Picture 1 (cartoon, rainbow, N blue to C red):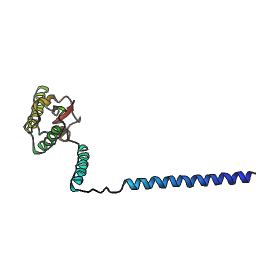
Picture 2 (picture 1 turned 135 degrees about the vertical axis):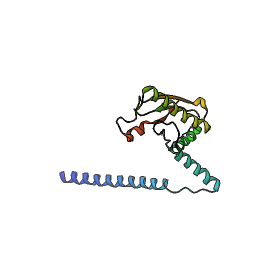
Picture 3 (picture 1 turned 120 degrees about the horizontal axis):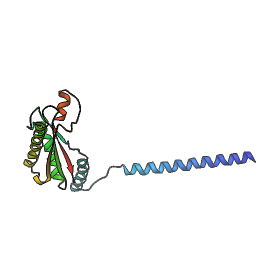
Picture 4 (picture 1 turned 180 degrees about the vertical axis):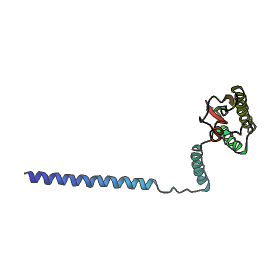
Length: 171
């Protein structure tokens, strides 16, 4: 009797494995069918599909949020202008978002001097965005001077990261 029960259990086990394998095979076939290339009948349909893919890709693009300045300067260099150009394009596509531009300085100099310099840096960034077509009402500025360093320490490598204007979106 024990042999018959063991044999019967073995048969059920094998049948179960075969059934599971069929289920797995069907799932793989369905997935492969979904991954087939889609054909289109016209150039317009293909262009529409490409537009949808481009939109999905564009939504994943990240915009840099900060520009850096030379010592005691609020002049925008070409790298800073390129970053702000990217911000301007993003702001044009997201018309419901407003921003605050924070002006920052390194730790050298007096508190008053750095507050004034941070304000000039924030305003330089704001003015550039306005020149690129962003409505002034969407942009606020604030200066933190040397009060909120990105990095703490001494030396040009650290100080250069603290001389910045940071764009922060607000809704």
